[in-house]
Structure formats: C-alpha cells, structure tokens
Length: 88
Image 1 (cartoon, rainbow, N blue to C red):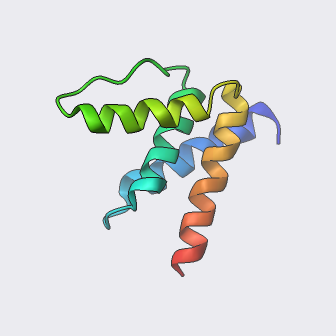
Image 2: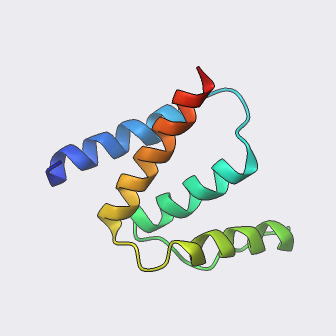
C-alpha cells in the first residue's frame, strides 16, 4: 500500500469507528486509542480526572512504543477490520 492509499484506508477506518453506535469492549478501545495516537504522532502522556483510566491509556501507549506512524496506521486498520469481521 502506498502512503496515499494507507492514509485513505486509515481515515476510512477512523470514520467507521466514529460512526459506530454500539459500545466497544474496553480492550478494543485501548488498542485503537494507542494506535491512533501513534499514527497521528500525538502519543503524549494522557491526563484526565480518572487516574485509573489514564493508567490504562499510558500502558496501551507504552505497548505501542517503537511503532512508526505508518505501522500504527496499519495496525489500527487491521484492528478495525478484525473487530467488524468478528461482529458479523
């Protein structure tokens, strides 16, 4: 996949997640969160009013350290495809 195709597929995957109405399992959300943050080069320390949620987010980001932006986009797309495939 060339960079333009990857960016398009990533945007479509993000859009499909944003339009989905049903709740996601927590593990899926955390994985998508971390991949999205890495893909968009926005992987800063999470902050929030709920320390335990910030801790889970920090752990998810830690597990994706070392991924390039393109690798994170690919994994995000794969995770979205797997989620919707298993839901059918």
